[in-house]
Length: 202
Image (cartoon, rainbow, N blue to C red):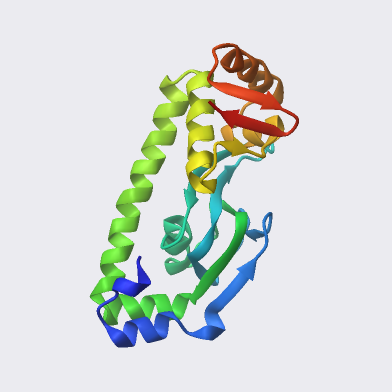
C-alpha cells in the first residue's frame, strides 16, 4: 500500500497516526508461533521476514515484507482471534505502523481502499507460498540458494551480502553442511564469491 496514493484523506490521516509508528532494530522478533496477535504490522521502511517454525526447531522462510506491505497471516489470525502460525522477525532496521485489530476491522467497513489492499495482499502472499512449495518440492538446493541470495540482493540493493551459511540454512530449512557444500559448488561455477560471513553475487 503506497500511503502517498491513498485517495481518501481521512483514511490517510488515521493510517498515519503518530502513536502507531514504531521502530524495530534488526533481529527483533515481532511475533512468535502460537502468540496472540494484537496488532497488524504495515512496513514503512526496512524489511521483515515471515518464517514457519516446526516443533523440532527447523525453520523455513516464507516471504519478505518490504515498505508498503503487511503480513496476511497476521491479519487473518488476528481478525479470527486465532494464535499466530508464523514467526515474524525484523530483517533490517524497520519503521512499522502497528495497526490495532479493532481499527483494522473498522477500516474494512469504512474504507474500500483498505479492503482492496487486504485482498491484493492475500493474492500476492498466496503466490509467494506457492513459490516456496514449488521450490522445496521441485528445485535442487543450488537453485534454492541462488534464488534466496537474489532475493536478499534485491532487498538490500547490493550484490555483496553479509550473511552466514547458518543463516541461509535456517531460512531454507536445510543443514549448514549442505549449504556450505553447495555454496562451494556454486563458487566453482563462477556465480558467487565466498569470503568470511560474506557472499558476493557475480
